Image (cartoon, rainbow, N blue to C red):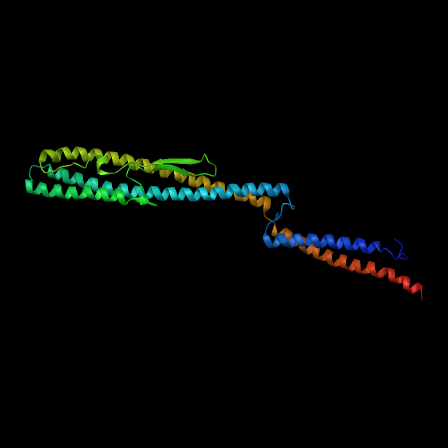
Length: 272
């Protein structure tokens, strides 16, 4: 461009456009540094933004599923505690039945043992009614349901807990007032112990599966977060270097713009 043509200062316009572009890029870098994200709007990377949101959906779903697994394990631990308390009582009842079956005891002593066992059976009923979670009884035979242990609707674990009531265990009519009845009670209580042990085994199997799911979900959350980070997170060192470069260019562009505006003023010297 000839510097003697002052109606349109093309050099200044080019310098101004360059400075505006630098300023826009600098603003983008500063935004990435302040948010830590390389993708802050869909304009930055439409495909990357969509992919990141899909990964975020999966990650958050996995996190909730992991919390659900923890809740499920808590419920099963409460049920297991109730079962264990009843198991301790059954073992004690068997001891009393074995004691009452011996011919060395008289009727008064057997009656005392029978009264003690009756009270223990009543305590089993109390334990069953008091073993609850969120208002639901757990070991009365009516607890069952599906736990959502994954981010997909099909990722469920169906749980059903057996009843530990005296009636279900078949010990609600135990009588130790005679040696013969006490001998029969030994067999009855032994069967009840085996039944309850089976129920506790089922709880253990559920908890074991939940532990594996817990590990799987934790790994999946970490891996999903890593992939999302690679797509969306900014490299702060790289962005800092880019900002320093743009700040230098900003200053040189401003200087060039000032020089381009000043150059046509030489025409005034020709008119003196």
